[in-house]
Length: 309
Image 1 (cartoon, helix red, strand yellow):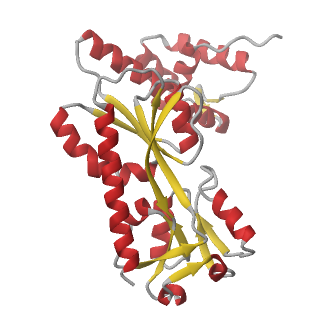
Image 2 (tube, one colour):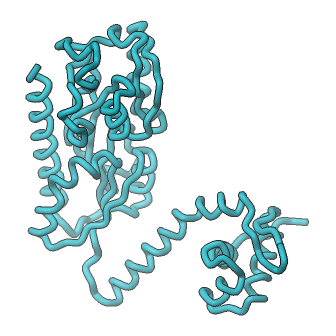
């Protein structure tokens, strides 16, 4: 039998059953009868060719595949909710909040240094979304965000960029670590040393891996952290040495770590990015200038900390 095409009503009914816990609760949420919801669910399973629910004593029990599908459709429904909010604001002649995206580390380090004062001065509401760099660039390319802050990576076609800062990579370790007394850490010094690596999903670790290969150094990778902030927290707890930039240093507890220059030199490039040919209803250049100024101040602070050996 030829598969039918799933429609939004199928996904909405399926999610309502999982959220409400029963077909009757889903029916109330959707304004339908319970038999209508059950029919839509059965049709969805028939079209998809998969079983989303087990039938037990008249109840619909989600299968593991149903929970996986539920999680995967969260992005779709959050986008739909966002569209509903936009429509509501347009109808009520409200000024739309600025949709700003960033990598998570920037959201907890750089943005708090800039956005509070900027928001008070402009009176604009701001919606902050966090993504890894590849997903952030994809979302910006679909014009669902007005501006973003990304690291590394190459912007896709249809995006404009402005450099914010080029941050050196420093080594970070507990104060009682054997390497803490050295004024400079070289790649060869980490050979066999317990090491917390950065995310390979965002390719943050890729350049570092290549560097270790060239330098013929093999740190003992005891943990890979999905975020630089997590890696530096692990270093605080004595898990191992990690590598960080100025933004990672900003969120760390400085009383528990020491930072040293690292060779060979590695840099992370941060940049503002926005959809090409999209007119901004706020002063985008001013916001970028403020982000750049704050980032440079953080770099100066980091350099003073590293030099205070």
